[in-house]
Every structure is written in structure tokens, then in C-alpha cells.
Length: 260
Image (cartoon, rainbow, N blue to C red; front, side):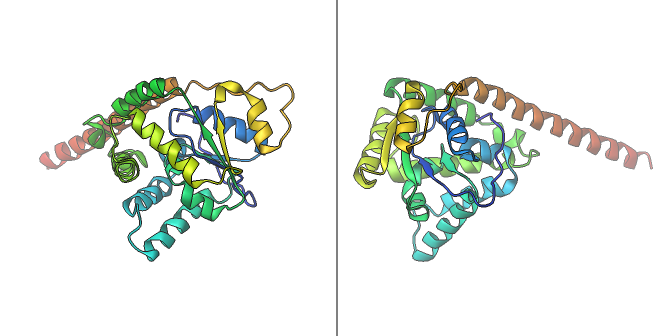
């Protein structure tokens, strides 16, 4: 979150499925993959909030049919996910990290790399994110802001998905964390699954992807918490400014009509 929107590049194919939960270094991981794979990375949090409305609307539609109740819904979800990820070298963060099965179907040759973190610090970090994204006034404040006007529906879709998969959503718990990693170990072939702590730098990631360590380039260390806080403030200010413009315009029109 807080990084720039990434545009797809024709001909690029997904090589890495980022299966790590949010707040496990997914932004740093995504930047590292951009360097290694020389292509755009689909960081879910960034794409849905900074991209055109088709991004967030597509994922809301996928989440509204999760889990799919018919073969038709399953095919629809696969097609929507393919549309969003086509032209990217990798995907990280939500909602992709909880749709690993679908992504493995679409990209059977892609590695599944799961970023990890100390579970207690993850729980605390997720509590901060939840506080920033579930404020009661956001739906009203963000209504005039493109893409972000759908943010509450997107968050609710993610919440329902987590309940379906993990049996609970918020507050994030150690049980959710463990259930996610247990699912990966039970459902992803061992030769396709890589567990990675971004604190370990280039060596384990490059070894897993069979790529050389970039010379003279430090492993990215992005402060995602600060970026999320700044992003949240920026979007609220965007919404308030647009409401001021809307209300002042309506006021001017109303005043003009009264003077007739």
C-alpha cells in the first residue's frame, strides 16, 4: 500500500504467486520481485486503491462469488482474476494471497512464495490496519473519490472471504495466521512452495527462483506502516475537499435560483 499503481506489460506471464498474508513484508517483497523478474508486480492493496475502478470492482465481483456456488461462477472468477493479472510477473498481498488455488490453476508453472513474520507482531500490525480501514465515516467521506468510493464494499468482501476460509475475520488472530500456512502446506506441492522471511534478504529468494543476486542493489526495505498511514490521510483529505467543492457548488446554484 502506498506505492505506485503498476501497469501490465503485454507478454509478461505470472511467475510468482505471493501467498503471504498482508503485513508480512509484501510491499518489500513485491519491489524485490520487480527487480528480479524485470516486470510489473500486482500488489493487491495498491492496485485496487490507486488504479482505475475496474480494479476494485473486479475484485468485489470475485469476492461476492467466493466461494463460487456453481461451475459458472468458478469460471467467471477465474476469468476476472486472469484479466487482472495478465501482463504481470507476480502478484502479492490480498486478495490474491487467499486465492492461491485459483492462481495455481491459471498459472501452473508459477512458484508459490509465502512471506512470513513473527505471528505476534503480525497480529498487532493487522490491528492497526483494521483500525485505519474500518472507520465508520469512510463510506460517506470517500463517496466522491473514484475507486475509493467502493473501498468499504471491498473490505467487506475480504472480511467475508476470510470468514469462509479461516472461520473468522477480525480481529486478526494467531489462529488465522496458522490456518493460512497450514492450508498452503496441505495444498501446494512441496517443490512449488517457498517460505520466505524478507528480513533474510536476497539469498533465499534468489535461490528459490534460481536467479542471480542483483549486484550492487540492496534488498528493498519499505516501511509499509508509514505508507498506509499517509495514504489513509491523503484519501480522507481528497474526499473532504471534493465534498467541500460539491457543497459549495450546490450552495451557489441554490443561491442563484433563490435570487430569480
